[in-house]
Every structure is written in C-alpha cells, then in structure tokens.
Image (cartoon, rainbow, N blue to C red):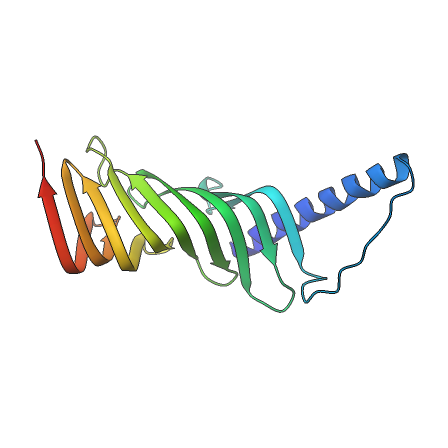
Length: 186
C-alpha cells in the first residue's frame, strides 16, 4: 500500500520537474543555483496530496500538505501544514490537522506534531469528539490515536485533560493516562 504513495509522489515529482523545465525553456535564460545538501536526490513536493487506497480501491486516508519531503537514505517522509482525513474500520470519518507530520515508508503510522487537532465521531449519530495536543500518533492499521503529551478531549459536553491518551476508534474506547482533569457542562 505504501508503495502506491511513493508511485504517486514519483509521478508528482516528474510532473513538477517537467513544468519547471518547460518554464525555463520558454522564458529568458534562467540562472541556476545548485545547493549542496544531503537530500539532493530525494524529493520535495509542494501543495501535495497523498491518497492511500485499500484493496477495494476506496481511500483509506488522504494527506494534504504544504510540503512533502523525503531524503534519499531515510524511510521517513516529512510533511508541513498537514490536513488528514481517514475512516476508522467502522466507517466513521475523522480529520486531523497539524503543523508537521512524519510518515514512515514501511508503517501505516502518521506522527503529527505542533498544534494537533483530531475530530470525528466514535459512533454514527453520536456527537463528535475533538482531541487537541502538541504531538499525536495515528496508527491506521489498528485505528488507534495516542500521545504521551498533554492532551485535551472535548466530547459530549465534557472537557477532559490529561497527560497521555490512547483512543481506540474501532472499539470506541478512550484511555487517559495520568493527571486527569475533567469539566462537565450542560
């Protein structure tokens, strides 16, 4: 599945390169500056979208990012200004936003950091839950959202804060780790 992502990224990189080359050939001579960097043969895509599909062809998740970058000798793909949408195994839609993200090539796990917000309903027809933290992991195989950082969960009029959270979206179970504080409102 992850190979499809890299196939899409390769196509995007080829498209971007061809657009840049056609612009250089049609305009005035362009000055070229070569930067010596460790990722010269990696890739960088701007305003990119990754769509991972399942065996049925339907999207498992979609990642939109301002930039997607991979260095040549690393398995990690770095993302900025991430907007993610996915469905849990019960078919419930979830969204996530973050300043940064990392996706490992061999794993189905997305690490989000910086102003992370996740929203969705544990069950159809139920009021949506909102999870906020500075860092959060989304495991797309097991439908588990987790963090060891401070986290706030807003759900059905409850405001719950703790250090550490594990939310099993498939089983509709939330486990708060420590330093739990709750506020109930009508």
